Length: 477
Length: 146
Image (tube, rainbow over all chains, first blue to last red; front, side, top):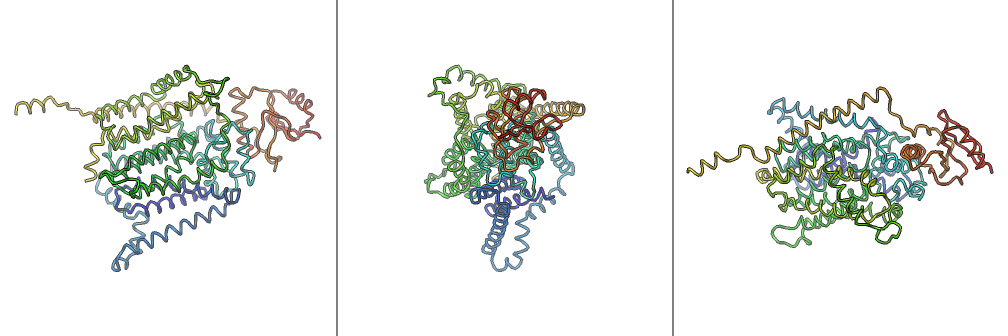
């Protein structure tokens, strides 16, 4: 039970922040709130754990727990005071009761129970059955390799152990001898693992395994619930099933790599930006900024994705009525979120991250120069990967979906996704081409499927939103 | 009126979203079957030969290396090959936060992972080290004599 306490604390913190930012009447469903809350809470817990290393130069468990406790108390007090200010005197007579009801999702749970009474029991059983089947599938796949895949041992879990057991020598993990562990990579996943071990004396391998399952589950839940706010329930459910049924995606997601964390935060950013634009909601823009910060702390691809998205978000959230966006409330909220969310990444890169030892600039290198042949191999390999049997035609199906969307995928609501994917693909290709440290075929074999699995949830979101997106206006009305 | 009726008659019964949903359902079913088959095969394989983590060979050595930041790592295998590389990575995971240096033996403590005891003994003689511990799978923790 003690192992699950950090998760409960993170979920509660995330839930309260989302409650504070988005009052229950805003158009978000219970599952969307839960899936956003949990990821947000884990991101915050990881950041707070990182501040322990900055302030004390080691993991100070008491500090980490105290900061969490203070944050929890502050959030509860803020909600209480906000509630008191909002209610008039008559309503405050039963304020405590309604606050509890609102804050801890009693309304949602009540309406869900009422709904289950009205709808056929078969639907409820189907929903519960799907959750049980997904949990069983993820648990089984994850337990085939309880210590994870290659990068789990050589990168993420090694860093987690250095952070947890290293004491004041934790910075040894940046030693040049450990170049195989990509010391320049950001630390969000290792810090989430450390937070999971906070009540324990030993770094049990169960926590990284559970984290991989949680993030896979959250990604599927977020895909379903995020799409459900803009399209009908059935296609949203299909999207989530398409994701978790993909054997390749599930294997990568449960391998304890950081790619599933990246996939989750990337999707969360898109969901928040989309909803923020639809409803012109400042709080969702703030949340998108925070999540962009956590995305940047996942791994270098996440940093690249977050920078690209931050730039695109400025145009995406611009006011339809022609007001100057840079002075608008959405921009200010987004910037505030970015400032808080990016802080750990900035501190990491300024004070700790060593240079990338696995980088040779092919433009300046006589021994390992860039060649057109390398570019050709990259382009061909990407094409083959899309058609690879391991995806069972998933990417072809998504391409068909784009054709079936009858041009809706190019509309402004979706354009940001298209521009993001194009610019992300361009930058990634450029990096593959310029960095001639690795033999390109081996490098692509090892990393490209992971990059694709990390963007898969976002691409599914884009395609399904485009195909069924005409429905969203009805939903809003 | 006639053209409207004709248009209604000729209008496709299946919309693009419906066709796309159908294709999705097919792919989901295919994926479920493939994944189920893979899980079954892996379970069968595991029932004959359980999960084996090579890093477990090094477990316990960390108790003898308290406050030692870096040690040497020697293998007579080729560390750029997949199996030796995996073994080294898993050893590093098991023993972290101790750093294993596979490129240098200029440390007080060295782990030797050799195919035969003779090779390990020869290497220890060469670097003037004495064995501290030899575990059940033949991994040796050696200390250099000053």
